[in-house]
Length: 342
Image (cartoon, rainbow, N blue to C red):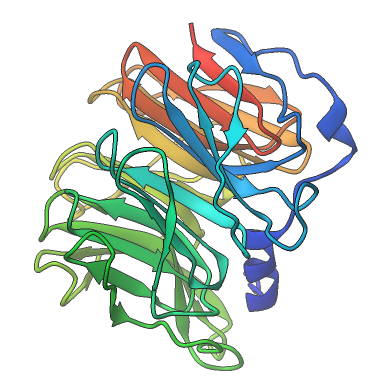
């Protein structure tokens, strides 16, 4: 049984991926058009989101560019071929970005950082009420109602587009350090204002074990019900295609699939033991998941709902898959590598 160390896990969230292989041009994998080999300003990418065929956003770290304000929000107007940095200066790295429509977007990161745009161009900071907390994922169901999650069992919600955030759970700096049990949430997705899911890991130091976490709410986050998986791997991402069908991915190449809204999760064989960090589906059959570690990247694809996965490998960690529709699919690598499905 692995003895998961809290400090190591938290450092993995924020560590830089600037390594020697950064400057190596990696050939595009089969079936993918390489739009950008790497970020020219040596920025680290953590997440991407496209609002149209040509307009997209990326977040991460630009510490080499601005050490005191490392948070990076980038945008592309040419479908991912080139990226420019937003004017907003951020004192912490960013980890995730989500847009409800072409104008309304949010990004989250370290130290409880939340940024927002209401015109798809200009960004401003919001007050999260959880300073010092690493926020890992954000999701909105409309331009008003959204949720964010992070370490130390943190779950936030807003009903007015982020002008005010409410702490539903956790949010305490230092919680879970030592012998106390704690959960760390890595991804959140809501299908409507009431029904949502979070995934991550629960650490039980005294029992010297950890448990995979998938939780569901049907009352807007007021109460959460744990869904059984029988697994102990850290989950990094969840994608629910609808209220019944969904997938979750994470550590050791784990892929879990549900056909009944999470009452039962079944393990699918991914063909890799690398950490999978992102999963997205275009429909019930066609989907993608990406991941890897420093110097090792993986992309897995399926055309039968995950019954079988095809594995491709590269020498760069992949961090995000984004599906606008079945014709427009992008993948992002940690050093700014951008691939688009041909």
